[in-house]
Amino acid sequence: MGVEVRDNPDAARYEIREDGELAGFLAYRLKTNRITLVHTEIDTARRGRGLASQIARAALDDARTRRLTVVPHCSFVARFIRQHAEDYLPLVAPSLRDRLVQADPID
Figure (spheres, rainbow, N blue to C red):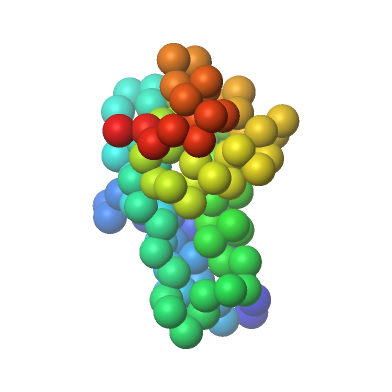
């Protein structure tokens, strides 16, 4: 079965499932054309296997497809964007890009 990431809009989160079981989530707030990525959580028994990166990538790719501006409140997502700036920094709200690149927290 493998790993699958899906948006669960009723719960306002992306969910990652491994072999059909919930392995973690990335909570968000959606407002018109802006998505605030709030918190990433992976089951402790499944950490260290790249699941958080997979869910962050899926959420950011979905935001790009939906033409949403991203506000990365989640420290993991902010770090992921910094590490993959060429692909994902353009999605971040322009007023927040400099702070994100400088590793300042986005409140």
